[in-house]
Image 1 (spheres, rainbow, N blue to C red):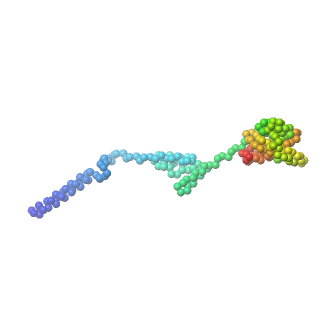
Image 2: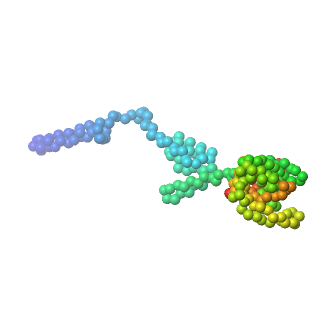
Image 3: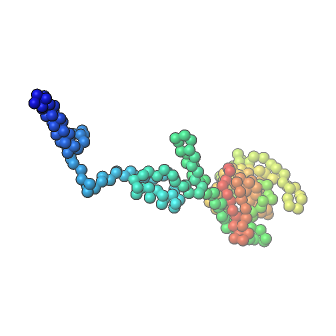
Length: 237
């Protein structure tokens, strides 16, 4: 009996520990604060979605579809395919995007009229007189007959300071002819205007020639025989 009474406190302690363990097991894990109990049937929280940034260059159809699919999954688009002509390079954490080159500018087209086997175009001289010039790539300078030059002098658009000397020109028949050389303040063909064009004075019976002192100042020029047009590229001035 002594032995039994000596074991009684021990047995009571063991029973108390077992009761505490049972209560803890029913209460669940201990966390920060009193969290509400969860149910197996409760819906799971939806993770927040992130906006897909618009790439700084146009995407191809495949890349756009990939980007839309990623956006639906809440992920950022990490790879894109640029359109042809767009170059993307990466250096470390920097991305360099080079767009396609601008399209080349189209040449100006000026309608020409065929006269005696040659083409003529309307030319505005010094913003004053409009006359038809023969397009002559074989002429060194723009050539204007003396009576037209006199008209320019009378209107004040050509003066003594515009004459810059004399030069001897060889004509198509092999003969030579001295001529005064002067500065034409402006020549306009179509919407193309050049200033300070070198010109020479021809006899009164001479022809108006649109020569190399005008044509050579464009990066390119050509004649469209099919459409009867003079094509002038950008001017190098």
